[in-house]
Image (cartoon, one colour):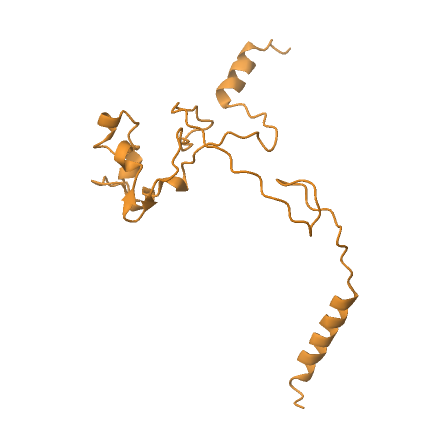
Length: 161
């Protein structure tokens, strides 16, 4: 036997001995996250996929430069290197006919700020930034207030001495 393999074999034997001694409980509680309850070894059915909102109402943005959310379903939309279904309504040429908001002018600029005739390749895949909303109960409570609300509350609060 080669002496070069001896340390590797000893390390492997030690690892097997340690692994054999560890007794993982089969009924250990699972992490309480999106799928609370159950145990680690128990398979539970996945929750049903929620329906997308389809209200076509423009939503308020919560911070400057927030990408607008998609207020309608995009199920079945093809967005790949050969086709972008979003641009059939939101492109500069089609937005007047479809009454859809035109894609921002920033989407027609390259990384150096130069204007382009078509949507920039780095802004072509809409779902990188824009997402449809689902009709679901929030996972966590949210007490977010935008800056306008905070400034309004501060202005209407009584003056502190």
